[in-house]
Length: 618
Image (cartoon, rainbow, N blue to C red; front, side, top):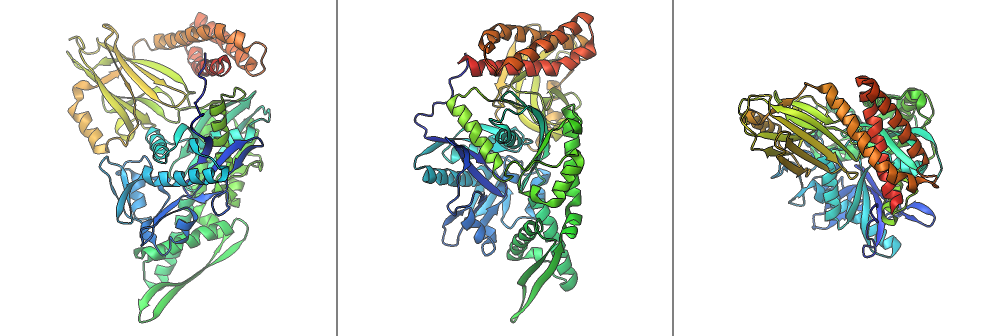
C-alpha cells in the first residue's frame, strides 16, 4: 500500500546536512552507522561563510572566514537568519546596522545581499554552502551525491522552509525532505537504542533557538510540542560583547567604531573567540592593537578584560528568554518538568556554563552528555535520509506543524483552523458565513502565525470562491478545509455548502506580501470577507470526532493484519483502540468537553495508523 521510497539508483549517495547559521555539517550512514564527513581542512564543521576576493575568487567555509577581517564588505555570514524573510520585517531591519555587508530590498520583497559588486538572493548564498557540503561529501566518498535531507529550525515558517529547499535545488541536490533540527537530534539520540521515554531537545545555535518535546517508544519518535525564536542565538551573544566593547571605547576616546567596517569585523571575531574561551576559562583578555587610526602614524588600541561573570550579566536576559519558551512548550505538550526523562543539548551555545546551569535548574535534571552538540543534527538528518532512501520500516517520525494555520475573517482577524503542534499529516474543516447581503464571492486568505490580527501573520496564499447565491448575510455557508501532508505541503479548499461549488489551491510558500499590502487588501476587499459561523459549535465538535472515527475505522481493518506478528505497531494498535473507546463513550454521553479533548489523540492515532500502514504495507 505504501510508497516504495525514492529512486536512488541514478542519484548517488544520500546525505544529511545541518545548514547552520554559524557552522554547517554533513553526515552519512554507512555500515557502522551515522558518521560526520570532515571538511577539506579536516574539521567536522564548516563555517557558513561565503566571500568574493578582490580578484573575483569565490571562497566558502574556512577560507572565507579567515579573510573576513580584511574583506568585510564582500564576506557574508549568518545568511540563515535572513532566509525566507520579508525585507520590511523587524528582524531584517534590525540586521542592517549589525552586519558588515550591504543589504537591499529585492524585487519580491525579499532580502538581497551584495558581494563582489553583485546582488545575491539569500537562497543563492545558502546554496553555495550546501554545494560545498556536497563536494566535500563526494570527495570523501569517491562517488556522486544527488539527494539530501536538510534540517531547519523547528520554528521556521513555510516560507523559510521553502527558501531552504530552493537553496538545496540550486546546489544541485534533490531535497528528499526538510526536517526540524530538534527532531533530527532526537533521532540521532535514540535511534536503535530501544528507548521508552519523553525527552526535551534544547537547541541553542548560532542564530536560532528551538525547544521540542518528544515521546520515544517502539521505534516511534513523536513530537508533542515545539517552540522557538528564529532570531535568538550565539550571534546575539556576540553582539552584546561587541556593543560592550564599542561603548567602552567610545567612552574613553569619543570614537564610534561602528563607522569602520573592518574594525567591526575585528570586534566580531574577538567577541566570538572570547565567548568560546569563557566556556572553559574564568576570564580572557581582548587585545586589538591599531583598532583605529588617527592619521600621521598615530593609532588607538583596544585592551579589555572580560570575565565569565561579566558575560553572564551581558547575556542573562537572552538565556532567560529561552526559559519562557521552554515553559510554553511543556504546557503545550500537557506535561510537567518531572515527566521529562532526558534533556539533550544541541548547538554550540549550549557549551556555555550559564546555559547549562539554566537548563539544569529549569528541568531539575542534568542535561544529557550523550550527543555531540555540533554534530548530532547532521547525524540525525543522515539517519532520516537513510530511512527514506532504503524504505526502512523500523523507525517512524511523527512531526507537528509549528504554527497556527487559518484564514482572515471580518474585522481583520485571524481564525485558526489547524492549531500549532498538530501532528502531520492532518486535515481540518471549519464553516464560515458571508458578511454582506447578496455577497457574490469570498476571498480566502491563507495565513500562518500566532497573532490574532491577520496582518501580523504570514500570508501563504489566497484564492476566490465566486458564484455564491444572492442571499441575506449569514445565510450562505462556506466550508473551508485545510490538508497538510507529511512533508508539510498545505492544501486549502473552500466549498459552498448548499451548491457544492468548490475552489482549491495547493499553497506554495513565497516571500509573501508586505504589511502595507495586506492592510490595503483588507480595506479594498471588504465584500470578500467571511466571519466564523459560531452557531452549532457543539455540532462541529461532534462532527469532527465522528469524521475521525470513520477514518480510523477505515484504516483499522487494513492495519490489523499488517501489524499482527510484528513488534513495531502493536503499541500503536493498542493506543488506537483505547482512544476509540474513549471517544465513542463521549459521543454516547454527548460530552462536548470530553469530545474536544479527544480530537488531538484521535488525530495522532489516525496519523500513526496511516504511517504504520505505509511503512509496513509495502
